[in-house]
Amino acid sequence: MKLLVIGSGGREHAVSKKLLQSNRVTAVYCAPGNPGMHGDGIKTVAIAETDVAELITFSKREQITWAFVGPEVPLLEGVVDALEKAGIPTFGPRKQAALIEGSKDFAKQLMSKYGIPTAASQTFTDFEKAKNYLLEQGAPIVVKADGLAAGKGVVVATTVEEAIAAAQAMLCDKQFGNSGAQIVVEAFLEGEEFSLMAFVDGAKVYPMVIAQDHKRALAGDKGLNTGGMGAYAPVHHIPAAVVETAIETILEPTALALVSEGRSFTGVLYAGLILTSDGPKVIEFNARFGDPETQVVLDRLSSDFAAVITDLLAHRTPTLVWQTEGVTLGVVLASKGYPEAYEKGAQLVGLEKLADHTQVFHAGVAQNEAKQLIANGGRVSLFSVRAKTMADAQQSIYAELAKLDTSDYVYRNDIGHRALKAPSSPFRTEEIGKE
Image (cartoon, rainbow, N blue to C red; front, top):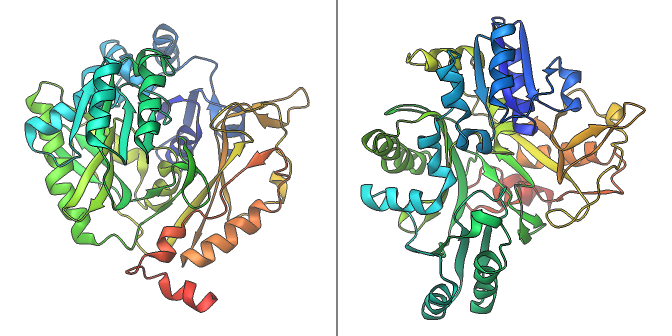
């Protein structure tokens, strides 16, 4: 099989690398990809992820077996629809189904209609009405841009003033352009967050192992929301019964709801969940693999990933075998200043010093004239290791990061901290022993 992965980030690097492990696959092309992928045998193609005409021409010329769309923008622009229409089998939801990520208001209405547990919310386009509602509700409260905002359109406000400022920035100051022309204000939920992704084929749902992302920019879960500063999988301190409940009350009903609404979903459905005292509830839906969760979750998949996608495209039940022992931990290296203004161009120095057991997934990188990798985005690369315990994983990954020159970069030094602190965590004794 010759496969095409559409996208350019760490998620697409991880997807492409995993597909290449299959003995059925002779080549994986990534459009547009990034130069950091070349070391893993991935062929990059200089075609923009939304350039439908060029993607179709390339796929036909190279006799691509099937395509995989990674990011949310091409999904919402209907790239899957266009490729399928051209006779190219494509894994990912069509435009109508991808709206579950493209509009938080649509997702909220869907959940309300079909009884899927989530926080109470109201949607606004008028700032004064939003302001009055916020004054009524009080804080803490959550303000979200309705559309896509690269993971940055969510403000968890601890004061009413902060919430009003967020609403004003989105509705009046157009902080996120059209994505923030409508906002969703929802009740703050307390509990442990986790990411549950599943392969979906219409009403059929095939769950993956759960992961935990770290959205805040700074250690201790402080600072601004980002696209994610690191992740680990599985999350041993979230009980299996809770995951089963989430599958039965959230994922399966959502897949059925989309079928009922004439928006049948094929692809990866991502549920950002929170375990509250009333059980798991939805924080957000994405219509694709999460980033950085993909980089650690796919590491847990023992099955042939290319065979899984092939089966799903043929509406067959895929074989899914997951590693459940130990943990995979990934830490994001970001440009200094991210998620606000940051500088590009800093060289990635020391990659050759990394141990063989360290996986590197590049995202916001480019090459300079000397063909060296340099920062070309906010989140630059993710580094991951696999270990028996969280304490071992943390020790290993931070020892690896210390080998790099990170003077122009930032990263969180506490990824995985919740696993160590959780009362029911099997890693808890490791932390106590260490102390």
